[in-house]
Amino acid sequence: MSAIMKAPASHRMLQLLFMFLLAVNMFPLLWILINSLRSDQELNLHPFALPSTPLWSNYAQAWETANLGAYFLNSLFISLLSVLVTLIAGTLASYFLSRFEFKARSFIFMLFVLGMLIPVHATLVPLFIEMKTLNLLNTRLTLLFPYVAFGLPLVIFILVSFMNSFPRELEEAAIMDGSGAMTIFGKIILPMCRPALATAFILTFLNNWNELSFALVLINETKLKTLPLGLALISGQFDNNYTVKMAAFTIVLVPTVLFYVLLQKHVTEGLTAGAVKG
Image (tube, rainbow, N blue to C red; front, side, top):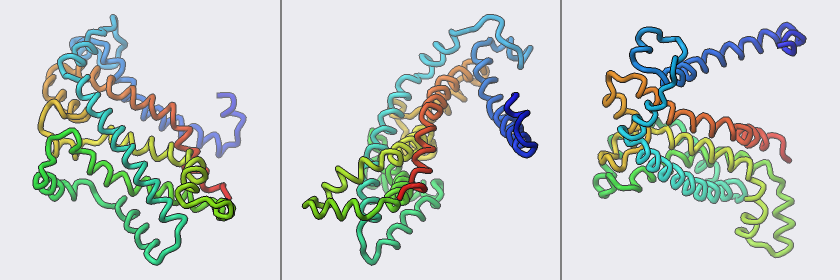
């Protein structure tokens, strides 16, 4: 607080505004966390009080009754697999679009960028029909295809912008030493892309982890449902048991928040490093 008071008036106002926005955003999360340790009776009597005795049994009930363990593993499997495929395909495509000269390069890159503007909900019906025709509904790989398709535009946009900042002299020197395109890619370009790859990994993983629309339309079997679908089921399963709901939400929410908080430095580095290279 003393650092805020020593700053210029305009900076103090900006810092106070950010602190206010932080408090506004953190309050619902803290409220859910606190009430996940209370009984429904306590919640109804005093919605904003601290728990008199923490009820950790709410978490056990939410985990076992709502089958969160299976949903968690399903989400982890499909999120990691789709991110891996997206990064491999996106990195190769970005290298091709960034470092090779050909007539349709700008047009192809623009098509990928336009992919970021397509609303997910506009594709649900045709995608469902296509997946049903190909007999790809209700399998462990059903969500892989839409996740990769919608993740590629963002990954390619980040990596192409990052690779464009690399000096051409690096590749020219490697070519003079007899290196081929894939050797240059594997030994020069790829190691330099680590900050951007980390950013692409984090953003794509979080998008896939929290995705609901595709999973809701394309997955019907309970054993294949992902964590967001599991939370939707919990909302109906525990209609009158709000504290168990909040325990389930906390189980899902805390790992996601911690994942982003621990890795947000890499997101910032990846988004800004390309602007200062070269």
